[in-house]
Image (cartoon, rainbow, N blue to C red; front, side):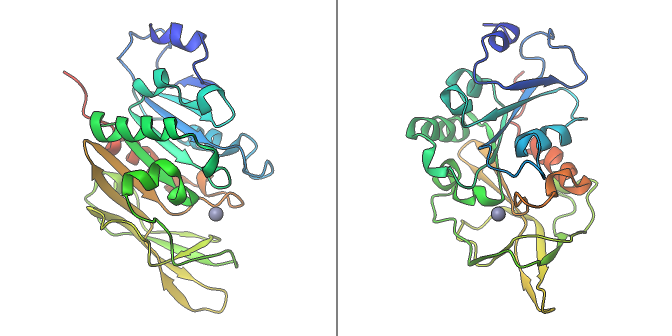
Length: 253
Ligand code: ZN
């Protein structure tokens, strides 16, 4: 089935944007990033949910088709057909992790490990079922506190592709995810962080971690609580654009 035909059938696709290239481009000429969320973010912060905000921030990625998907669509927004042509899957979940079906988890894990699809887990997606399966650990943080904490995101690996064009930056409000983070040792800690609590005390927290799992690349980004506007912030958009490029499987000859 051609991409256009696939799009016409819906195939779990809510909205598709051809960024800079016409939809009629020959199949395979564009890479595909799917931005998935569960439609639980407050509308006053994210009127088009979190996947809509992230998709907006991915504009400017040349040669990429950006697809938004959500859990309420057929096949929970990620049919086998869609996943098959997905180069990178971005995942934001929080309240509905347990609704994600076994078969979807299996499909995602297989696509990453065996076929090299990239996977990007955001914030509360540390407990997303596909992410936990890929990590193989509990994936818990030491604490979760929304008390008006601010954070500095620190570029720890400036040469890494995900850090390209990114400088240290502040997030005025963030939900504090305190160490330890129960994941395997990352191959690269691209972004580190320091939280400043309302009482002035500080606490460390890793912000951007990379792994290679089987054939696929996985990135976890700590910020992104649904009541804050993180996904509209320029450095966050830059990090996600970079992460998509980094996580994509190398192009077929
Ligand atoms: Zn949160």
